[in-house]
Image (cartoon, rainbow, N blue to C red; front, side, top):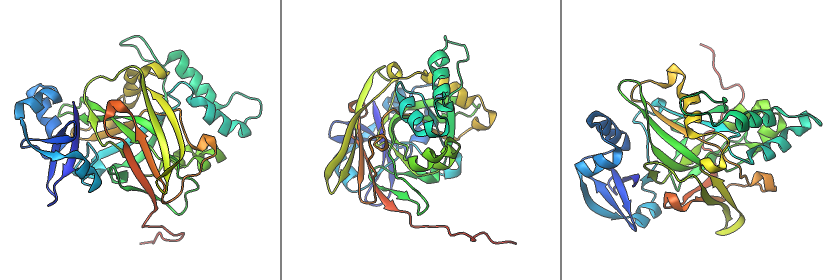
Length: 329
């Protein structure tokens, strides 16, 4: 089952089930978070709870997308209670580009990036119930940085790059007793500044503080072990770059269980009611092929198992902070 969140022409919010060319409204439910909280209280899965509450009228899916009325498939009414994070160097082959970016700081030596990747290869898939190697982890922001499917990703004036990162995203809700619940997975564009990161790997944290997008659909249940999608950049409607990408645990050096443990082992991430959006990493970047995306371009990330592609444009950020803008009180 695949869910979306959408708005009516009058701005009312709904949750819908994707069925072919149509979206069927979930009765009496305004948000995915509300649906999940009800499912937890009832001791049901999301899919089973949808069957309990029932489905209503249908909406044309392509119309919702074309009119920009599809929302991220999970959010929080207070964006400060949605944490957006990620892990890197998680996919087979993901170290190659990173290592090339950082070798200028470590001539003929094993870079820290390659060393961390090797730790993942050696210990990222521990036996059930055991603790595996700790992955690279980064913070992107709160829910305010999330851009809905179809909308433009804002590019700050200080940014040196506007680079896509096609990824799987885990979507989570912390239950009333502090238990993290995985609602499912979505397609994501993590959107980073690879030129800034290439200057020095210690700038990774700066390079990740950008907007992002995920969706349009939330896929419930387990994922296939092997997933293959396509990442494209369109300019004036024509592709200027296109490349397949692999994901799923068969193509990763860390298991999802290990990545989730090393995120939710921290008490501050177990606040009841909070939402967590976690990017699981990629091995495919247009930046690695010398492509420079620019305002006006469109990113398109597609993977058949997730339904409709995730598309986002790029536009200059409306708000630009200037040096000296901090005032003393």
